[in-house]
Image (cartoon, rainbow, N blue to C red; front, top):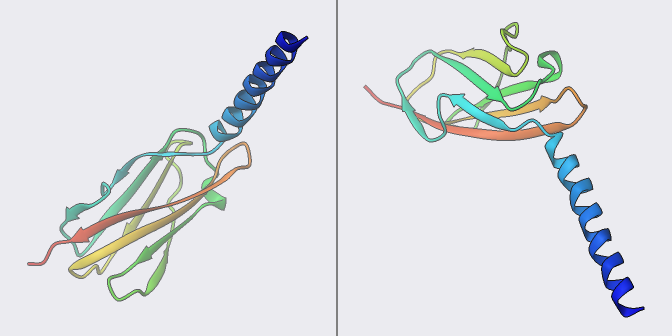
Length: 123
């Protein structure tokens, strides 16, 4: 009887693991960015390109630029060239630390958020 309970417990743990793993797999994960995380770029204008591991809904996704002084600008997302990418442009960047805050909606309905920090080099 003791052996049977142990087998059930192990089985339940495996089922729980696979259910949780399936849930995590639904989230869009950033796999590549330009500018790259913690990169130094030359402004004042840059193209932003973000690529994810799954399809995302560009019309329901958001990109925000955080400037060195803490001010925020919503960035216009261009028409998607691929179902797993977002592209935008940031203009008038001054030297200092910036962030791109992103929020995407994956095709399966999961929302994911993240930040890409980068520095604009001085002259």
